[in-house]
Length: 351
Image (cartoon, rainbow, N blue to C red; front, side, top):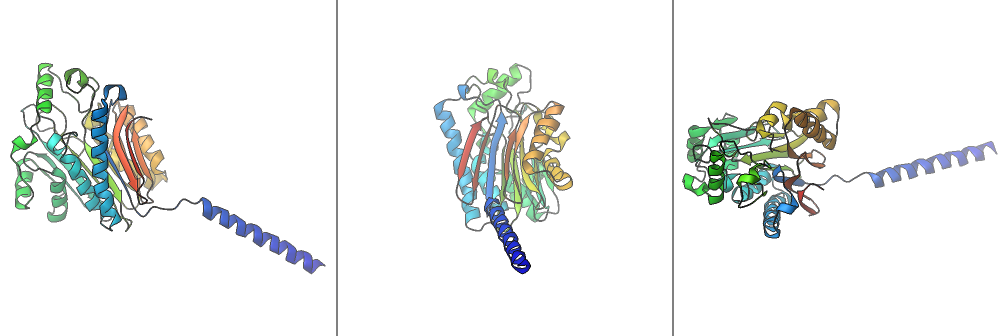
């Protein structure tokens, strides 16, 4: 009888354990094979100030860009290639403050900054203040791959780009009437017009509150490698060779296979706040040293650290497990994400 009771008890325990294991397996989320996330700038982006046509144009370009990277990842391409080619699409669009749509400096020129980082090797490349390279992110990639340096700037960076066979254009390629008018209004007002400042709408009567921003992309590929990239034209009416956070590794861009990949976009707080807060690396550090989740780390850095300094803006990020974050402390951020199942999310406003 005792033997029978023992066998019955043992059977019950094994059955319970089996069910427990089965339940746990069912509720554990499946890690995606690959993921890609992009941003096109953050700021005071309000639906009431956005025409249906302009909203559709933004969403269409965001979708076009992210699908380029998605196809690369789907076919087994690297996260670095996906990030670079996705940013190319946004650099070629006048909608965003990068490449073709770059804003003007006080001197009436367009000066571009960009950076890219490989999460597998921690190798990185960046350029600042270039004026003739059609796609600055391509220069950042060339610096990473083909030079012993991390960052090149100004005429030297333009020369390197030409030697690398990158597409060089006359500076007039970057001219857009709307951007030039924004510069004239900024000069007239004797102020620095911020990339996404709500007050800038007062001077940009053509487009009211339509904000054009820094672009960025982060990706996780099938091999478990992360990458991040950022590209910008900076801020309208900037002087003295000013450089913001976008080309600064650790501030505007960071990728580490042990944690995450991050691309940031500053708003009315300027990129200076993002440099001082070392935003992109700080998110990674909170994950690595404090064991925080990507979502919690991003929230703490953007809302508590950057917000505490008086800055604003946002980030897009993906961690080593394919979890994503699109965190911002502004009224909106142009953003999109896409996973291995082809599920596309495109958003503009805070929801």
